[in-house]
Amino acid sequence: MDITSSTDIQSELTEQELRLGLDPDLMPHHVAIIMDGNGRWASARGLPRIAGHREGLSAIREVLNFFDELNIPLLTIYAFSHENWNRPRAEISLLMTLLDQFLKKERQTFQDRKMRFLPIGRLHALPDAVQALVHEIANETAHFTDRVLTVALSYGGRSEILDAVNDIVDDSRSGKVSSPITEEQFEQYLTTAELPDPDLLIRTSGETRISNFLLWQIAYTELYFTKVLWPDFRRREVLLALLDYQKRERRFGRVTQTASP
Ligand code: IPE
Ligand code: IPE
Ligand code: MG
Image (tube, rainbow, N blue to C red; front, side, top):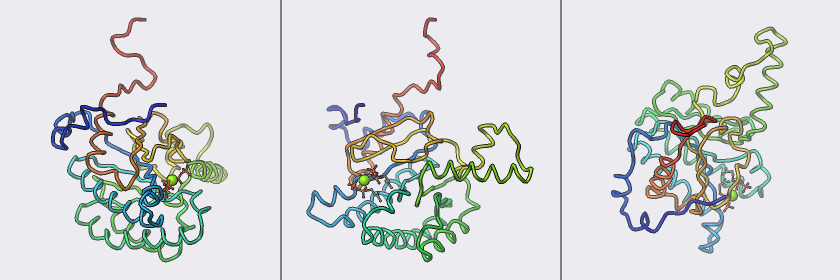
């Protein structure tokens, strides 16, 4: 699979020029991001991995601001996977501290932007204080519907699907649902029940895998892989991803209108 890199022509264009190339009618509604490469960004500079995570937060702020400007209403970010619990204790603990600081700092921003903070994942696995803060901010922003920042924390696509299956089994025992379950009904049991599927999924850092993210939801999502490490994924990189997305033809299994049989 090709990893997208900016073409020679694009590399000479200014941010403003790139932006002019965007078609406002083809903007994605929902973008999901696997923010990868923080550790490598730090190692390349002889810094501890946590320095990369800190710089990664700065990239999140910049991308959030830019999405606001571009009127892209739904952003879903993979912040901590189910499998990330297998990292060294010290890194996990520093990551949880950073998450706590980030949420405290951004708490007011959610209100100012009228943005919903929607955490997904097995949140009960998070440290108590972080868990409480996550729930508080989720509750106090739950009434905002126009813009949503979904943050996957202690998230795994397989465990999400399994949790849904187990809930369906419970509900069928009590007669709330009965087989056959439709796709629409199944989706109501996922943590993303209120969101449409992502139009575009971006993964940074050159890895071309999904790492257990949104397995059900990305069935027809356009995938964009870039070698850029997450802390370096700034406004210009957002534009390159969007321009690439706008070149795609989303067929959903159909054929192009003009194709001969
Ligand atoms: C992504 O960066 C952040 C998290 C997974 C929490 P990494 O920490 O995976 O950085 P690399 O992939 O080791 O460079
Ligand atoms: C995926 O990155 C998870 C997040 C970005 C939170 P990882 O760095 O954990 O994924 P792998 O291990 O390279 O697949
Ligand atoms: Mg990684």
